[in-house]
Length: 244
Length: 253
Image (cartoon, rainbow over all chains, first blue to last red; front, side, top):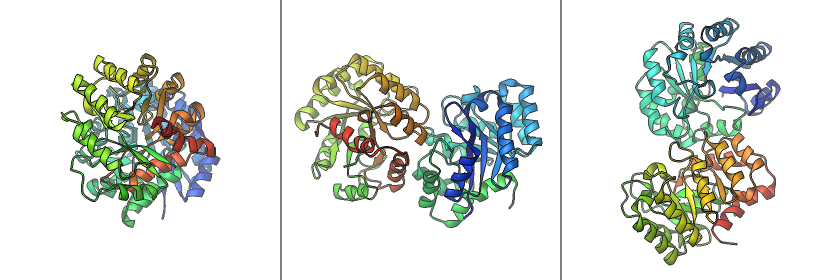
């Protein structure tokens, strides 16, 4: 079965690091065909271009394996928009935003220009979610309502204690998908029944988690093969406009 | 003997079914290489629970069928004042209870409060450890709970989720500051777990799943223990975390 990992970090960071070699090695070990890569911690917060260039170069070197997402700190204003445009032009397939590391709220207008740029280019926007008070499920719903033509990914499915909100927040709109890293296997089992497999996207958050465990929690507990295929590859393919 | 130090009695929002038996629970735990469990209340952790005693008693009876492998915990709500203190003394006197479970979020009380301090003082006096839900702002920060370790140095405080995903670093700082602050690995990423194993003595670390005994939810039990066991560690560290720390807190050694 094809597996696309929708969320990995590469680069040399302060709190965590992962080389391109190590990412590819882990992908090979666990049968992952391709992976969405984003920069690591400090390059999400500052020095965005340096982090984005590392990811873009990795994707150029391994075009069949690495799918680049770009990030920019919205507080840089026009410079951030310019940076995202540059990355999209260079092949970035989506936008990653991190309200904690970048210091804003999902509903803060400061991030709107970046979101608008992604929406205008039909690129999905991945938000880190789950950390109070800046990135909650209903804040993402509010943004998704504001930009109904956008496609948004609820990173980590708002791990941990917003689990009560997730289902209602996703059901309120048609343009939010949830990404599986960190959260309990049982949670996705129930969300698969409640929301349908087409809303769920597998991601590992490597190197902060075990890719093996993150894959196993889907393989073991999502019963239907068709659902697993959608979660592991089909849904992110659709968002990336790479098929279907 | 691997002990799951964070489980709950019954099922969320419904009565405990008849097929929830100690024998079946032990078999279920054994399927993931877990030999025993600390069982904490569930209904007693909700703010509308006015009398935690029936559930506290039921858990003791449940565990009595496997006294070497199932260990009862109990609940009170600190906001109930003297009746909470009376229940703590009753559980110690009648059952020699060793672990009190508190959930500041669900029970609606702040850790930094005179009511909590009264409970902490009595638990320190009686040698009862407190297992907290933690990792959920605003009332469940590790450093809020660690303050109790400073003010009540004879008290053992257990962070039941070791900071969950967002407050793992805070939990590590608390454990490094206070030797009587214990991390129950039940929520941090593998990277956070590895950092805890590197920077906190294994004698201050245990593992929990947060399963409900009635659910037999393998997806939860497997995920928590697989996350812990995915992290490389020396066999003696693993033994200390899975077995040594729980046994010491339970007074089994």
